[in-house]
Image (cartoon, rainbow, N blue to C red; front, side):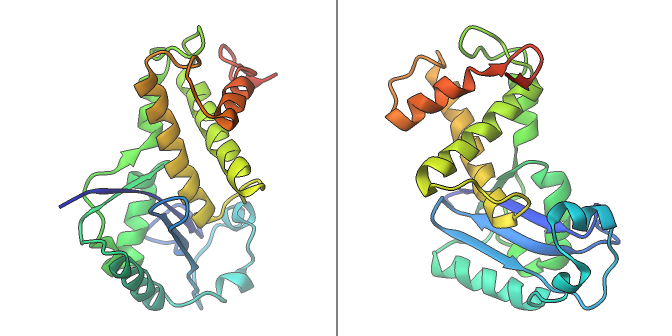
Length: 219
């Protein structure tokens, strides 16, 4: 069975899986193969701050498709792509600890397509921090995370001529996949910052030098 590394993200009404609900799911098999759908709930517990951050109202949460409908639609979409069960390795920020429990609870049919392994991007950032060199310095984990997210955002801007929407599960799924690919290229390069790359990537590397690697702030 071939594994598929896919960006995955969810938006929730709060952080406690036993109490709150998944209200949007995003899955990116690639930059152009994306499933994203709202999930509606007639009654639900919520954290007001969570809804404010996502940018939805209680009324808007009620407007999505039912969890059963979304679960079936997502599985049909995966089957149309020839994706086998247990073959998707989710890639994202807190994807194993935060997103997967909500998905197991809300979208059980889709959950069967997920591999038991995940790519947790925060763990990669901690591993690279103060260890992996970048353009003459060794950024800490916080700065690696900031650079990686910036790189993903910039790539989307270059490809689609727009800034990605914030707190949208589909967009964040693409961001996760882009982030992972960028940092893999950095590791593979062996001498980051001195790559023979396409013009848009070269401009990206130039802009990332504006990150202050000692304090984690943009100049």
